[in-house]
Length: 245
Ligand SMILES: C[S@@+](CC[C@H](N)C(=O)[O-])C[C@H]1O[C@@H](n2cnc3c(N)ncnc32)[C@H](O)[C@@H]1O
Image: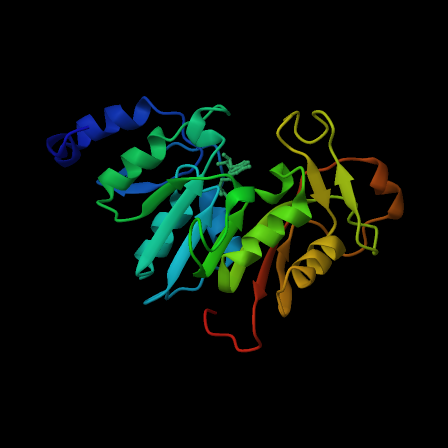
């Protein structure tokens, strides 16, 4: 897409229609990408700090990049979007949405193709705020993944994940060897909230808070036999002081 196309809403609309979108991104000029994700609802759930002036932000598993662009809009001085699987065309989406949105928004969000397990201070650096949204349950090795995520988090982590076994109070992780969760063979792990909290403390976060959850407190124990699409949003901080919201 040329810069001239960017100035022509009809041409931009045609480009948008050629892409399979995950996120709903407002590109301006009345054009919102037709993602299947309920992105505006999720933005409210994750409670990203309103003001990110001066902060560096890493968005792991960014896909179309909605949350990266939102962090930039909120003033982050540097945003790095990373992904692997979908940017390869491994799922039903590709990197085309991210590329088009970045150009349409005239965004300076950086990008890097990298696997979660290859994240480290050497490969990407350390960021004030890290977004790890909708990715943990795709991990075969969730604790190892969180070790890598913690290694690149300077201060504040916002994570949203599928959870399972929510009636179990001890830390436990459901394993999805095939397509048990949403018929998707790329889903592997369903930790319960207690496991999420315990793992985050284990990998070095001092304070961990569940900010939202999609299920009530009193889920009966017999539901542990059933795999359901439940999720939680968690904020975790290193150190005691709360400087990013
Ligand atoms: C459900 S989507 C979530 C996208 C976005 N973060 C959001 O919350 O809307 C999961 C994303 O994680 C990425 N992903 C899955 N496994 C990955 C891995 N091993 N390394 C890096 N990214 C991965 C996928 O490519 C996809 O973009």
